[in-house]
Each structure stands twice: as C-alpha cells, then as structure tokens.
Length: 143
Length: 143
DNA sequence: ATAGTAAATGCAATTTTATTGCATTGGTAT
DNA sequence: ATACCAATGCAATAAAATTGCATTTACTAT
Picture 1: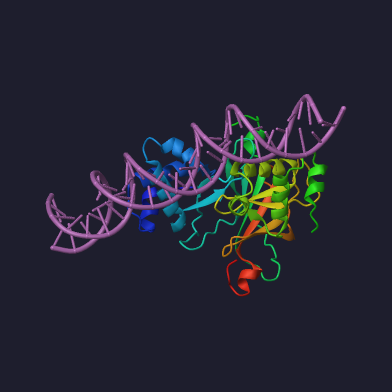
Picture 2: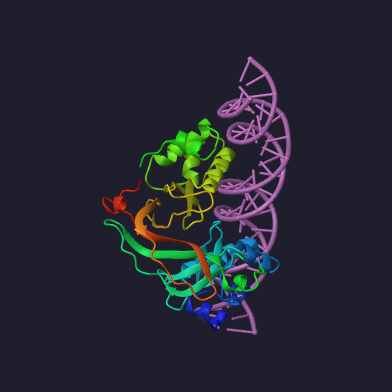
C-alpha cells in the first residue's frame, strides 16, 4: 500500500505538521495495526504524549485511521481503506489478534452478514478472531 | 435464566462470601451485560473497588463470567452459558452494543464460521454489532 | 515576502483507572 | 471451638487519560 502522509492531510483539510506526518509514517510502516502504547514508545521522544492522543483522535474522526480495541482494551490503529469517510468507517473486514505477539492484522476477509433480531438495527459490525498468526506459527518466535 | 450464586460458587470451589454473592446477583439482574464502572457505582458502598476487580477476574478465570470489551475499551460482564469451563469460554454468540444506551446484549445468534487465511489459526472469535437496541428504538428513551 | 489569525503543540496539573502489599477479617475443615 | 488459609479492605503506588493554558507553527491575505 502506498501512503503519502502529505496528501492524506491535504485531502482531509488538516494542517501539515511534522508530528502528524510522523504518526502516519509510523503507522504505515507495517501492514498490521499498531497499538497506542507502541506508538508512544516509538514516538515518545519526538511527540508529546498528549499530542499523540489528539492526533490519533482527529485521524479517527476524519476516517484516516480506524481503531481496533484488543482483548485488553488497548487501542490499536491501522490505516483506513480508501472508502472511509468522515462519518462512516468501512473497515468491515475481519481482524486477527495474535495471542502470542499481540499484533492485530486486518485480514482481507469480509465479515459475513448477520441477521439481527427484531428491534435491533446494526449500523456497523466488528469481528475479531484470536489465535496464532502466520509469523508466530512458523517459528513460534515472538516479534 | 435461573441463577443461584451459592451453587455457582460451590461448583467452582470458590469460598462463599457475601461480596461474591452480591456481584453475581447484580450481574444476574439483567440479561444484558453490565460494565465494570456500572458495577462499581452500584456496589461501591458495599464492596471495595479492589475487591470488585479481583472478584471479576476470578470469575472470568473460572469461566463464570465472560468479559466483553466495548468500543471504548471498558470491560462488560455477563454470565457465561453453562458450557463454559475454566480454560475455554464458549461465548461464541453475537454481541450487540447499543450506541444510545451503551448496553451490551448477548444475542441468541451464532457467529458464522469464517475461513482464516493460510497460517492463521483462530482459537476463538468475537463479533459485536453496533447500533440501536430494541428498547432504544421503541421510544428512544435512554436507560 | 510579511503580518495576522487560527490552529496545533508542549507542558503542567489533574483526574480517572488499575495494581500491589500488607494487616485484618471471615469461611471452612477438623 | 479452633486453626488455617483465603478473601477483603485500606493505603500507597502506578499507569492511563484529560484539561487548561502559554507558546509555537502553519496557512491566508495582503
């Protein structure tokens, strides 16, 4: 996937700052989602903790990133597919949370449609599988 | 569903204490899951904050409760179906998280089976739908 | 280019949430 | 009834998130 932070910012009417660019760069490095604590560890020297919170929030609001909660309630972030807009996320693919390396993958697998009981109206749906990822099962070496 | 806290404790070799009974009673009151903060609010006068944490953890370990993370990373708890054991949860039904009242329902809907990509081995899977629940759509009055 | 404006950042302070250690209390088996 | 061990409560600490404000930085119009 080709990520151009500068254009992403332009496209969403966000000011171009080095902190914002760095966050996008860092997240684009890997195809798997990265957790907020990891980001903090990597960028902590360059970007203030609070600023990071704020950047992640606006990115999520704007539909640039999507946020996946893992089993422990920590936020993980991945770049949204191009179809995401400010008010509707289309990250309706299956996530995979490795119980060995903790990484969260955005799988190229659609979430099957599910019939809701009468009275319940679903506007979005999220499914995440837990288990061992490909890297960990080959070699079983953590990260 | 018929819940007998005393027997549940016996069945899992847990000591019978009034705090443990109260937690189970409180959770059994409603068919929907209850969040940790809500529990704390309801039981805060009777049970110490720390004790509540510990009780919820042991219940989860023992397979008495299952924990569902909501969109905000807060833990919600519901009584496990009878088939849960200490080392394997069978809460493989769809959850519904109402964006109005925040309640989490355990729907009587099975999670469809999903084929994992090569290399990925799923041991459990979780899907939660977000939207408006039956109570909120009838009347649109929050809790 | 420059100045003006509004927004983004960093820092400090605060709040909320979670965890740990230890003395005391309370169940349970004998 | 007693003794033992686990569970509880309290205090202290740690970790995570939030808020307010002064300063800096990007963009716009001139």
